[in-house]
Amino acid sequence: MSVSKFKFRQKCPVFGIYPNNLSESQLPTYQDVLLCYQFERFGIGRLRGDNYEPRSKEVTEIVAKKVENTFKKSSIPIVSHTRVVQMLTTYHKKFLTLKKMFLRNPIGLSSKRDDFVSSAGKLFDIAACKCIYFSSCTCPKERKVPINEQPFLLDQRTTRIGRIGSVDLPETKKITKKNERKEKLSKRHSTSTLTRKVSARTRDHSDQPDSHTDDNNVGASHIDSSKNDGDDEFSLPSSKTKQNTLVLQHTALAAHRFGVSDGAATLIVSSAFLDAKKAGLITEDQASFVTDKCKISRAKKSVGVKLQNTESIDSVYGLYFDGRKDNTLTQVSEGEKYYRDTVKEEHISLIAEPGCHYFGHVTSPSGSAEDETQAIWQHLQDNSVDVEHLEVVGADGTNTNTGWKGGIIRKLEEIIGRPLQ
Ligand SMILES: [Zn+2]
Image 1: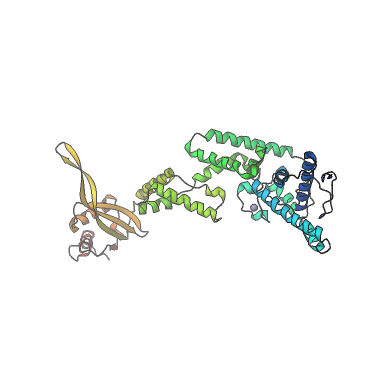
Image 2: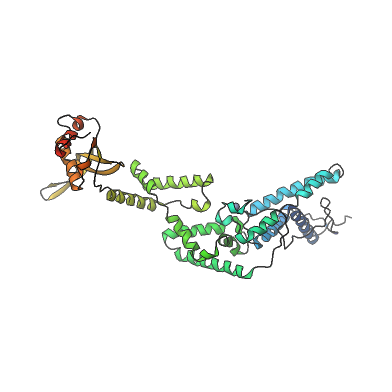
């Protein structure tokens, strides 16, 4: 008859200590975690009967939860549950291998055992933020260690003198209130399109693996508690406006320039942000700058309006122009009816220097130098541009432009009454 292997609590042969549950007052070390594993294995085995060997997966799950809870108790954001289980499994396997070898050859492996034991005194660190110096921590907000927990975690990672105090009541209240406020806000906005994005993000946060708990508050509290108490009231609104402040002026200009559609521009911009996030150039938070079609279209419009407005230049030193024959849609009247018709029209774009300002474009009824000059001159007059300082006129080398007698440049010189470069 076999004797139940769970009848007597045995010292761990490697550590020489009895299995024990996790301490309530400290974050667990590797040794603590292993002893807790043995403790749980023993407990399950005793319950199930003589020769039942608990599956390691089952024990690991329990221990992982316990370890996670000690961190959560001190409001330290942690890595995902899967990662914790993975860390535990790996480390336990390593332990089993050593144990097996050590039991076979206790003398030969004593130094190896000593190494293992001494390194097992380190914190089983599942904190989401691994930064050594919290002052230079650039982790995303939800991974950051709350300021008032930083000294404790630092202590637990090094000297391990500190203890978890009793639950800080006022602090807990504050956190709960914050979360309520947050929830209300996201509910209130969940109807409008713009804010739907925000709440989706808030949901993302709570879906994050660190909040795998029965206690919903914990996950969110990480996000909040790292903030200054002073800006409580503004914490959410600011995070909301943050995404809207991104001015896509250059993007819009580029899109205009190459005739890229709003949808295409949106996709490209968003992809660029994703890549930047992947490369670690921007944080999770900033990555939510991903934009939508409407935003690009708005930006394009506003850039267009801006361009039109700013180009009322008073004095021009240089004037460059280039013509192009375009198919233009016009309305042709025939009696009482109007028809749409495409007409070949000469379009001339004007660029003003200095600053390379787009200065407007004019159309002339024909491609003749006479008409074009007239059109350009008219445009200068219409915009009451001071040609007093006009020194330079530039264009490509078409005869229409540069002809020494009948070119546009020559004709402009005649109108202004002095030679131009
Ligand atoms: Zn960090």
